[in-house]
Length: 180
Image 1: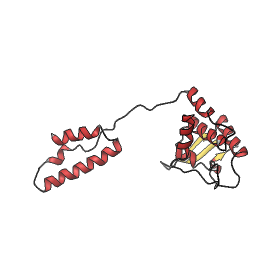
Image 2: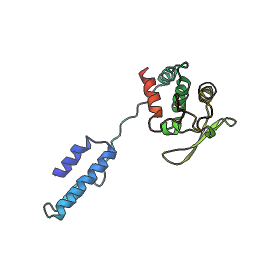
Image 3: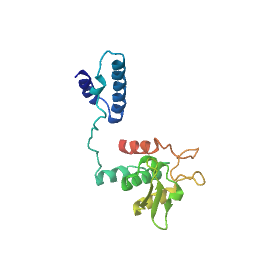
Image 4: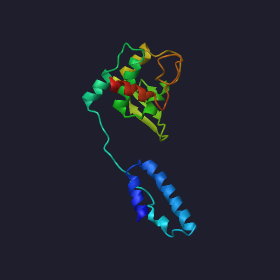
């Protein structure tokens, strides 16, 4: 009964991924206590897996998205890039890592589509290149992006003009837009 109560107690304090680790550690401790003869049958009190807690995902309204995308300053050194990245995220739902690692060769302008291999799943994904997204990317490529720098579409706005960090590139763009 004490182990079950402890698991419930811990379950309210950890995320599902972390709770799996906690359950494994508790199970190992219980097995040790069983093997030393201190508490037989204790490991059976630890659930085999934890139930995933779910919470609703916040979704921005269309007007909020327009405010967010419109908050970028086209005159700023990264304004056109930030606008294109935010539009691409809002209109396609691509993961940030897939946006940041998008390559020039992934965009087929003639067919108006984007084809890329998703970073997380390894699956090839083909999406339509929506008019407003295509115009924003083209505006960035033609008027702001340094030429001859990288195969990635989105690069740093200051030298060295290398690809953005996959783990945080879009995070900083979005957090600045939300702050504005």
